[in-house]
Length: 494
Image (cartoon, rainbow, N blue to C red; front, top):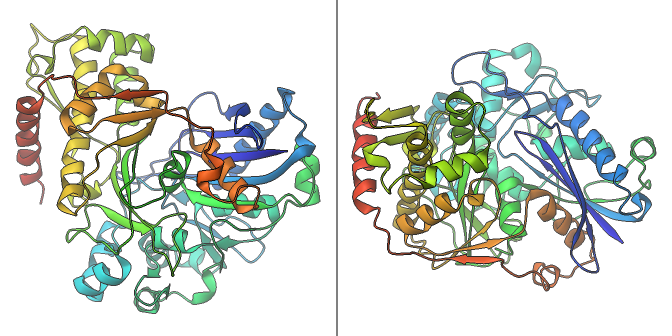
């Protein structure tokens, strides 16, 4: 018996098939081979086509099947992880009405700020746990204000994973976790926020049916099953945003446990059992995958928009003929501190941890007689590590004191230099695991379908592959210099 996990990423779609008996991945595939396009019609905007996601999901599943390492007819359940905060709108015939306004799009910042002022700081932080900010509800309000012809046809709004589940099953559902990441959920009343819905003028009918994260969100239709070589009636038994799902994939489900990732964006995600909000909404609290009204489990999320995307940009611009392994080796040849070169890696939209300011990427202290390509590679990885330290200090202000952080050995955590810099500047050891989003989605599907009784049971055979601890290298002086440059830049933005 097997589980199929689908990860709807910004860069690509990845799928994995997991054996329920061993917990091992039997086959994985992604589509496309190159990174998916992000459309930017205007400065600060970011969109992708939901229909493109669906096309890529189908192709990734077929690639997996073609490896002939399992019988597709023995797949028992499907789980979906997805890029968070994106807005998808469909009409009554389940036809997509516009490109998705994705997570790093900044157009709704002011709309969310006005909502925060109108609803009130106390209400927003105590009941929504966040400012409406640049999240899904505010993006829908932007459509309502600027594209009334689209809004008038809207039957349901949803997140990216909801759209893929709809294409698989014909059903549209959501969850408390999903509604909380869109800032629709009132944690004090434990219901859809009528105050927010009224303020934005949304009808409750645009919200899909609410179901638990671990439950049947629909069953694969015969036509879809036939086209993908699957068995009709397979349940989609799990849907979660990529960061809660990453935490699940690392068995981070209980208070005090902390996960991190450094893919397109960088995230530290800690679990707590009490309602928590940052006064400035620099970090955000959402319902975790195992949240229940009778047993609260909240995920506190720090996001840096451009970590892997920053590393990719540097590769493309400064090292077009160089691969990531070569970049890592070159960076490691440079001394700690990059001989004074500093990089602020904030060029992927408004940064929530920087009060939704558009800071941009900045390279400081370039010496044309000293600094080389390798210096730039190192300074980028150090700048990203410094960004994590800056964000972790905000989490610490909010009561989170991690003693260890779990991360998948992928993306930037494949770089020994980055991982050691992260550990040294945060002072927190990192436990590395073999995992990814599609694996977490498959495990979630097993829990949702009742194949596993709990996350603990699902991860019985999973062990960390490496523990990275501080090695005595002192980055504090370099970090304080970097932070001073960041403060100077922030003070120039109105």
